[in-house]
Length: 64
Image (cartoon, rainbow, N blue to C red; front, side, top):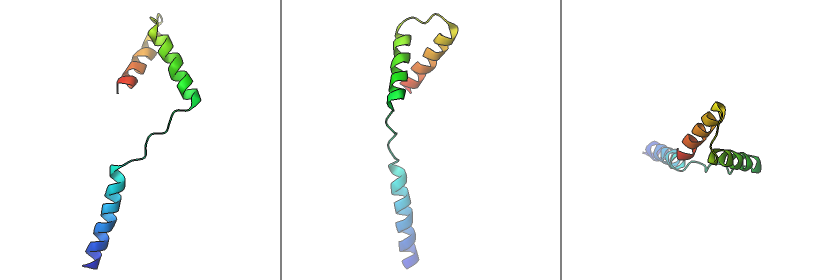
């Protein structure tokens, strides 16, 4: 009986911790500046193929 109680306490604790994962880390100033520059570039109409690909991937990441 005691082993069932211990087992349920362990499994309950593990399950509870799995329900609430750690919050994602806040972006650093460098990452914020990079996002802002990509956003500004994609607001204008990109002309090169690499810029179009970058903006497409950036939009997909923003929508996800």
